Image (cartoon, rainbow, N blue to C red; front, side):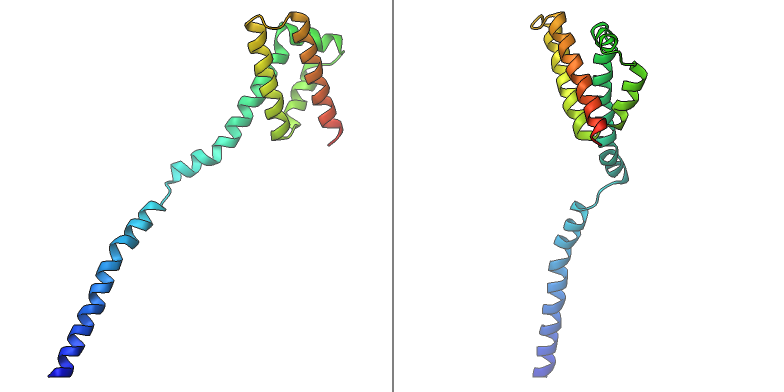
Amino acid sequence: MHSRLKWSVCLLGIAALFVAAEPPARAQDQQHVVSLSDLSKDAARPAQTRQANEEAVRTLLSSDQGQKALKSAKLDYQKINQAIGQLSDEDVAKLAERSRQAQADFAAGRISDRDLLWIIVIALGIIVLALVLR
């Protein structure tokens, strides 16, 4: 009888360990579950960021000042537009940041038409140079 009691206590102890260990394991599994929509959003985010960055550069280049700069540099907008799509994500991000800043400064009156024109010419040079160095 004594050995039977030991086995019963032992089995109850093992069962208690399994029962006690199960809830945290389930909670942990639930914390690591990522929905398909979350994965899709995460996967789409870099493409959306790049698209927004390209649009910022294109907006600057399609402005009146941008068209003047293209004309003075004897560059075709369509070729530059295509070139923007060929730049690396890093180069597009840098140009977009500068484009947004230049547009904001111009709108606030902190820079003149002439200064903006120079900024655009420099941006065009960066685009051309980045493509040549590839």
